[in-house]
Image 1: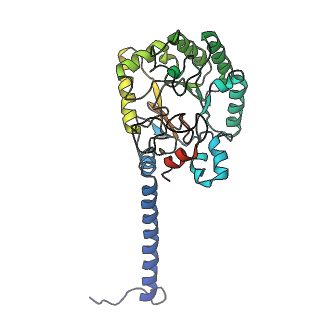
Image 2 (image 1 turned 180 degrees about the horizontal axis):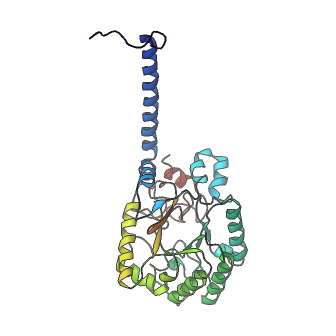
Image 3 (image 1 turned 60 degrees about the vertical axis):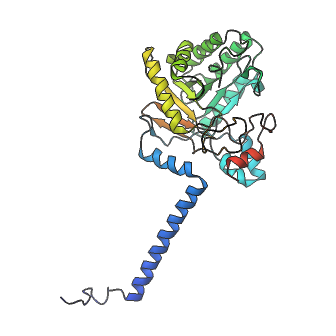
Amino acid sequence: MSDAPTDPPETRPDRVTQWRRHALIATAIAVVITAVFVAMAVRPDAFRWSRAADSATIAGSRPVDTPLYINPGMQAIAAAREDPRFDRIAQTPQALWFGDWSAKTVRDDIGKYLAGAAAAHAVPSIVLYRIPQRDCGSFASGGARDEQEYKEWIQAAAEALKGHREAIVILEPDALPDLGKCEQGDRLGMLQFAVDALSTTGAQVYIDAGHENWLSPAEAAHRLAKVGVNKVAGFSLNVANFYTTQSEVEYAERVRRELSKLGINGAHFVIDIGRNGAGPQRDFCNPPGARLGAAPRLFRGGDLDGLLWIKSPGETDGCGGGPPTGFWAPVALGLLGK
């Protein structure tokens, strides 16, 4: 058989042209591969989870492209204006917390925030954090002065949330896991009141249940049932903590199985992944080894409703050598691996 080329002369490329074409293709492939490995080196957790989120279900849920709201008043945005190294934090949606700082203005403050999210056609996420004896006098101590003040505050928040079915509400981080650890008054009664008031709004409410290393699944389910988790969307996990997404999903599923034993089915959950990129930390307070987690995203169709940034990365935990409040550059740079 002849080894002569069969292409017509006018279309047959010469050897130099073929070599150049192959070289260009090889170069392009190398650039892409290099970029992927650089991205993995900078942010391995983000690469792994973005691929998983796009190709597989998590707890029966698939990711959706519904945007989460970026509050223009975030402290990280102001910090990024001075130092662009903080851009990655500043450009990521995060929950807005309401507590003592909104004691008399919570209705208006939440209303303005929700209006901003509606104008941006994005899903807002908020944290209600003002139960009496909050944090039992530790670093995040504070809260309403008494039960009546708390109930009035919750009612005002519920009025602002009325009809906002798209809103995500995280109710009182640590309050249920901390039950009975200090003089708290009728904490169960206050949480039950909050759940009842918020359940009428239409918002997606998640009662905080701590994390995998706090309560056993059976105890978490027992406490959630007591305060009425069956009346709202479900529960939240890992708020302001560092446990991995996978292990928290597994814990959430165990809690759900325990809830089913109590006759409660269909409770969904959300997980805070803002600072879990390096996994569990020995110290929970501004730990230097912590890293940002993957980008937040909403999920639908199964048990998981969202992987969110609930605790704002870069804002101090109030201890561990940091200031009591505010965006703290050293801890933010640590989360960025800088």
